[in-house]
Image (cartoon, rainbow, N blue to C red; front, side):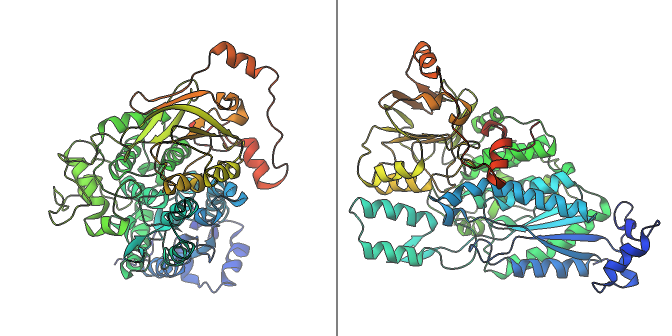
Length: 564
């Protein structure tokens, strides 16, 4: 390892030159810096550690390893914190409305500390869902050399020989309400589903975003599917610090890495792995921060050409730890690269191109595993995240269509203006096969904060209604959701979208084959219903929720706050 001083022309020089030199240096001396430290780069470590959630409670050891790696490579580590909201814990509560808001808070934290302290680079560490898009958005805004360190996935839990994960609990609630699971078994599933630290184990939102970051080239190869409890995750964090110091030398910045072509690579991997619907929202926001032209229709363009190669939960069988054993994201990427479905010339944080990084990865997946399929025998011939449009979603809506026998339904609307009453209707047995549930006023402005609907969708699965009941919402879904569900409906109800004017009993069609989301009501009737409508009063008038509701763009634009 080359530990010679790194010449910094832009940032660290600020504390050794000019009239402000003495007071600037004295602050550093107060923290134990020595004369020789002032020629070293100042490298931020954005540490998402907290004891709020298992996703983040195992991050401190990674932060410690990253700091050690920065010092070894000739830098000064400057540690600061970022917050997190546990989606799994907040699900179904008012707290869930802070989840997407936290993405913006995290990005603000990273941008503010990096720019305010004039750092030469930043290493961001996070685990739970919004940690990753929030961290990358802040990295892109600051645009100094940066690398993302994912906290790692969780191991599976077990009860009565059954493999468990967080979604098992939500589905068990529905089974219990339907009378097919005892109270005792429900309690035991709750106790055993989460065996330790790490992010939710399927190809849910956290693992989807970590995999996409690896495909972007902003994280190290293989790092996105490592388990938090395994020592290789600590080693990877330390190696990430070494790589970042080299990137500072070479001045490789996030906007050099996150381009239209690299986003195409990331979305291709999301499709190939069966990733979360939330990736659509987050990559619209990431592209916005990167200054890259990218629209909701680009997801549909990628979906049509990229097959689903991986048999992963929630619509498949395996967890991320099994994907890791099978060859990880590099194996998936090599298959896509050989099929002409990746841009091999994209730059990565390592200084190598995607093609160079994948050079030694086998061309075909190993025969002794079943998680990654060869290109000629995919799970599905096309991707799973479909963009549906129609008079209910002229700006687009997002549906996950894999794992369904027939992703088409026409049925009567069952209308709810909040999540809790919808959940209660399912638990009380009031929702029947053939119904189309409409959950509205849950978008970026209406929620506010666009909460996830894992509680009602999990209850539907548990009640045996996952393929026979449709559910549409201007809110979001957990990465663990599957079924006849359509989210991100835009424009949202609070902005006067047509979802606000659906009446109980109206006929609605969800057709993933034709990419349609239609309300079977005439334009004349819709016009009558709109007469005299006014937006609902804001649910919050002060604080972070009020600011989010006031500034948030449409979900079709990523629900960003600075789309001026």
